[in-house]
Length: 193
Ligand code: ADP
Image (tube, rainbow, N blue to C red):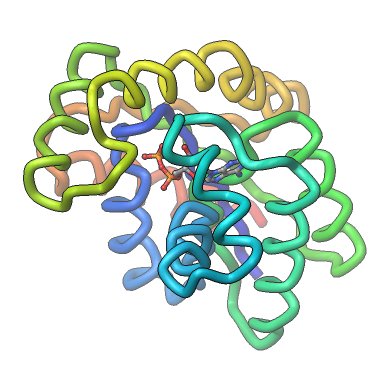
């Protein structure tokens, strides 16, 4: 199996690049944001609990997202591997993911971190707001999501760096250019694993 974390601040392009990666490498896309949005659309108890937090740009509690991820991994037992998108967002989530995958003998091979400067993130998210109308894509909530990323989530990169699994990628340029940078890293990781 090939398990990769795609990482970066809101608006870095994780979802866009994940779609290209799963097609080329035949992997399963596991986006906690997508799962949470589906729960909200179906008005499940979990979705109702998460809605308030998401619409403020706050994180959903660790135990909830860790449980969701565990279920999704188990329901895709035949998968050739996963792209984790939007997860882990805290050190506790990163440790839980290592435990879950450790029990299944399929570790995370690499974290690919998309680097984009803050003003470009804001511009991209405001543009997406016009196109998709996501409730958390307005300027106040965007600013809070970036703040939560800087204060809490960014430290997750250090967790992977400590174990030699962190890889930085320039997240600017065309979608194809960025995908080219990502695929050369994945090809390298595949060769050495
Ligand atoms: P983006 O990367 O553009 O901020 P996502 O679609 O990944 O958006 O996530 C949307 C929201 O869902 C987040 O702002 C957060 O409230 C919640 N969320 C998603 N993944 C997690 C997670 N791993 N831990 C806690 N909350 C999460």
